[in-house]
Length: 134
Image 1 (cartoon, one colour):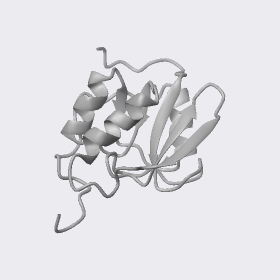
Image 2 (cartoon, rainbow, N blue to C red):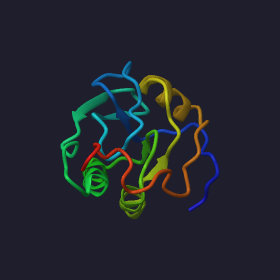
Image 3 (cartoon, rainbow, N blue to C red):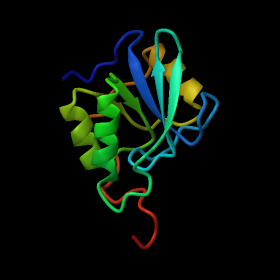
Image 4 (cartoon, rainbow, N blue to C red):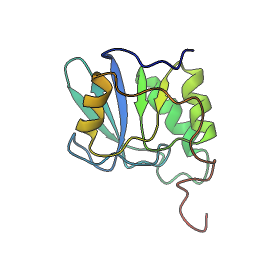
């Protein structure tokens, strides 16, 4: 897989979000984000789905990775991704782009302009985003 930036990108994109619309802030967590927003980068049509794995005791990254893969996305835009989620997404052929902040709409615009490059590995350890004391 090549790490070069793609030119104006299209296809289905998943953005981790703190809310259920395009004006929501990007959630810095992948596995335990509040919402997954699935956006058609060509038409800007979107679907927001509350993360079913947010309260998981363990394995949220893998479960969320499988959930997103089932939606046939091409790319995930998120703040951070742990090693298990990264491996799950990569095995499904999904590009992962970390370091995303701002609103979902801003992230999609940067993606469409080809300004974002896929990351080559996890950006945080496997316990990132766990509630304290778990």
